[in-house]
Length: 146
Image (cartoon, rainbow, N blue to C red; front, side):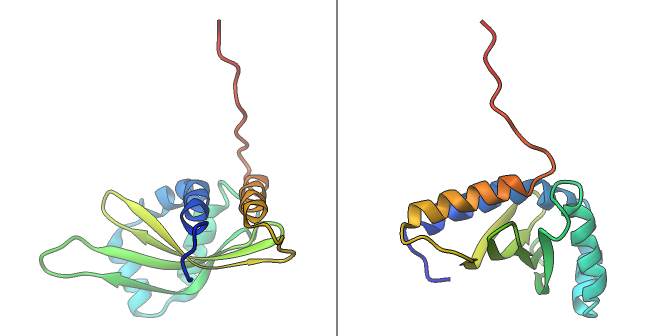
């Protein structure tokens, strides 16, 4: 995706939304991911992603995007990269999720708004609302005790 002034904010929104899914996926051994990627067992990878996502998102919101890669060298820890498609209401986001030993990160490849606004701020706000609506676990601001 061509980076623009809104890219960073949108990546933060998406990263925060899928953080629990990434945490679940990091519980899977890196060797299993490498084997599945190496032998192109995409159906199994899709099942793993779906199982991790079903705890947090409505069905069909987070999907494996039929691609991925791994970085494995003798002098470094493994890194798994999975292509994901996020499909909350009104928007499709193509994301590369990187899973490391102690971290995870995302890079948005493309965002497709079904009915984009001419105002990029409105599109960013819609992205945040749409992802929040697709979650099972809603977060609400709690009043502070006096």
